[in-house]
Length: 193
Image (cartoon, rainbow, N blue to C red; front, side, top):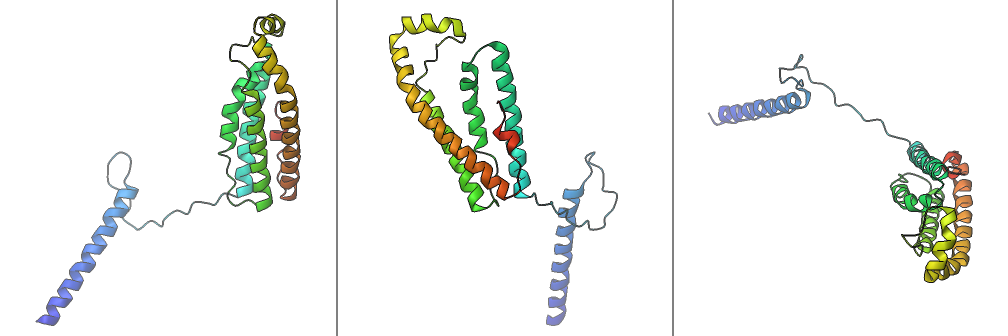
């Protein structure tokens, strides 16, 4: 009797587990219309193909290049040289989300250096007043009316030159590291030129 109880309990447990597995499978494979699935056969789980880290990195940079090119075109068409400086910070924030997991240490380090050098350039540019005119012909009158802005702009020039030089070096390091890995990032590096 004790043996039968154990067998019945084991059979009940097996039946319960099988029912749970079927409910889970039905929930996953239930048609969108709420009807019953066409087949009650167990469907093997789909494997998600792994994305090559190099491809993901290159795709992320290419997407950013498209945005930079659009802003550059808009700045040229509008005649507003400050537009690029106003719209670049959000793009550089997006650049920080480009996937680098799985890349070589050298490439990942070079990309991090590139991001930091661009942050340094943006930091220098923060002294530009938000009310600065967007048209070149209005700049002279603005600087005369706002001597503090003219002074800040003059003091900013050597800092900007130094930060830009470091950004150019970081760009060259990134290009070299990417080329070693067989990744073409020229579209990204030349966007907006």
